[in-house]
Structure formats: C-alpha cells, structure tokens
Length: 244
Ligand SMILES: [Zn+2]
Ligand SMILES: [Zn+2]
Ligand SMILES: [Zn+2]
Image 1 (spheres, protein in one colour):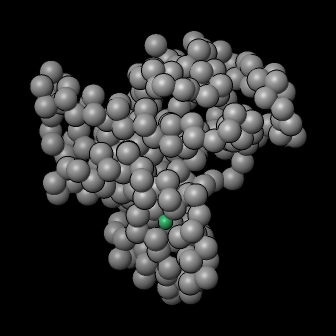
Image 2: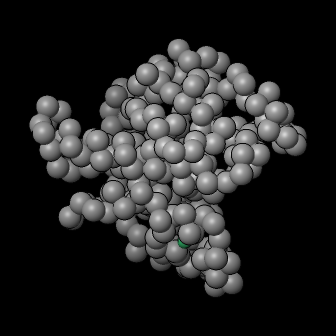
Image 3: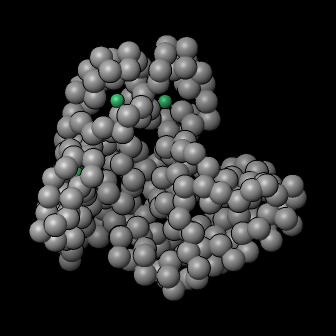
C-alpha cells in the first residue's frame, strides 16, 4: 500500500500515488502554518482565519502571513518584488482559463498545463509552449540568482544547500560548492518560496543529478551563460550542474 501522508489516501502502486501527488487538487493549496492541504484558495483562507487567526494572503506570491503588519513588510521585500516580476508566473498566467497555483514548483505547473490542454508530445503547440516554458525558467534563474553581486550569489547558493558557515569571499564560495550538484528547478523553487536554509537536495555527481532530474521531470535545458554577463555562480551552475 502506498499512502499519501498529508491526506491519508491509499494507492496500490507508486505510479498512482505519484499521479495523485501531481494532479490532485488536494495538494493545490497548503497552509503555511500547519501544513494541511486544501482544495481551494477560499477554503485555505477560511481555515487560516479560523485555526490561526490569520488570513493575510499576498495573491501574487501565494504567501499567507500572520498579521497585516507582516503582510506590509512582505510587500516591501525582495521576495515579493521578484514574485511580482517572475517570468515563470507570467508564463503560466498567460494561458486562458488555466488554474495556475503559484506555490507549486514550476515542473508541476508544467505537467498540469500539459494535461489541461491535452497536448500530444509531437504537437507543434506543445513544442512551442515547451520552448516558452524553458525561456521562462532561464529568466527565472537570473531573477533569483543572477542580479546580485557575486559573493551574494555564492552565499545564497550555500544557504540553499545548508553550507555553514557561509563563505566570506568568492574564492571560499567556489571551494565550498566546487563538488556540488543541484537541480536548477529545485533551486528556483527554494528561492521562490523563501524557505529555510538547506532544503535543496544535493547530489554526489552529475550522473545521479541527471537521473533524478529526468525521473522527476525537473528538466531545465537552457544555457544560462548565454546572457551578456553571467555571474560566477551561474557560470558554475551551467558548467557542472545542468543535466544534459
Ligand atoms: Zn494526497
Ligand atoms: Zn493551518
Ligand atoms: Zn507578495
């Protein structure tokens, strides 16, 4: 038996459970305070108001805050600004009637979009959408990891995978993550949700990372160094972390 822990549903095999995790509306809206899942945004807000006495939601980001003051602070944060300008959000919101859930990782939203339109993998619409999706992912990496000074980028990357203490110089940063393999979609999702440090999974080598990326469809196929001035971190990511 395969059980979905958050909602206690049982499945005969892993594939059915995976399908449920990916597409069930049960997993569309998660309460940030108690990790319960809700099928609609309205239900989540009603739950938060009753159970936690907070229902201050920032729609563009999908963040639920404890108080009006925290919401105001959030609205002035880098996180909010970047979520508002997010190319991934713009891409998914550009599809008429598609119910985009901003908190889902991009590869899950892509699967849902694929299913929503019922595209055949060989269809020209599918190929065109895939290219736009990959463009959006590439721009997204730049938004979260590419527009800060180099040392900040190294430190952010170190925080993502839980390296402590943080490097004090770029050279230290390079040494710290020299043998680091991470999936770029995992990195993007970590940055987008403003999660705690050290949540991004590390892989021992490129082969393991590749296998994981393909199996979980966390596929990122753009060369982010094609930008005018890629910073050192993006260069490093592209050199050794991209599944190709
Ligand atoms: Zn479930
Ligand atoms: Zn809750
Ligand atoms: Zn916000």
